[in-house]
Length: 306
Image (cartoon, rainbow, N blue to C red; front, side, top):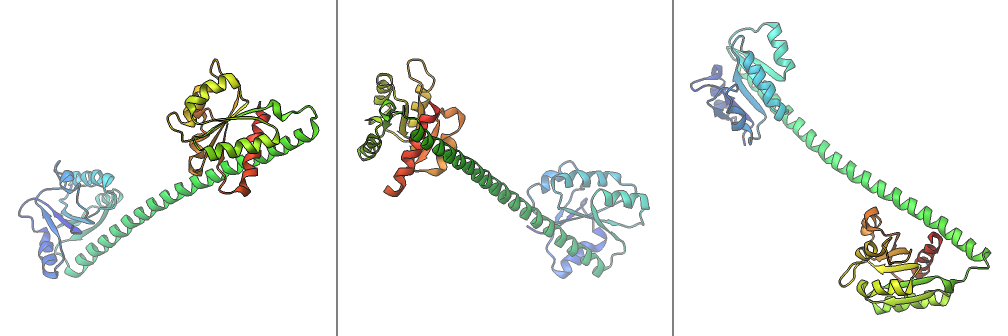
């Protein structure tokens, strides 16, 4: 698309400016319509152009109004008016206040006319690029804000975990009446390795543990076993862990319990812990045996909320 549009009624020579542009090989388009024409805005709506050159007749306030309306949608568009009479200062003030970039008096000076138009093109492109940069910076800023907010939420969770761990350890050390065997934990996972691992770990500590392979098999087990803590994979065959939490938490016929979701995807934590899921806690699956003890501690902390 060209950077210059000459807009005016058919036969308009623009004081010879059209010939000047053609002489120096400057690309331009000509629209045989006044900018005050209702169809003008539609004609330029899809165009990427920097400067519109048009004639301004004495007292032609409609052109100023049209320019103002057009620049509301295309703020980086520069208007240059050609006139054959010296304009009244009040008209010039109004014209420039409403966004005109400049005026060219007839008879035209080739050098000064070209200089004004080329400068207007550069200004338009600079403002367009700046707006693009600002939009990019805004997107980047919003992304950084979200990352900071996530870090703050994670930091809050970590502080809460540490606090609960300290309370839990203190509770175990000071309350002689605490009997792990009285705390029931149900593990729901279609991975036999994972079920066996957690059943063994928590069984050694002394918790009363059971395991099932699906949410569908867990529902009747929750009613009969009445676990204090349910630990479920997020992804299961059939009903998901979150769907199961919604099914049993606070529902008639099910015991009061602490519901924990296991997931390997840290990016899903915000969704899992959103209020509508009914999930109490989310634990990232350990990548190796060294991290298992931390997972065990966090799951066991569910006893503090019972």
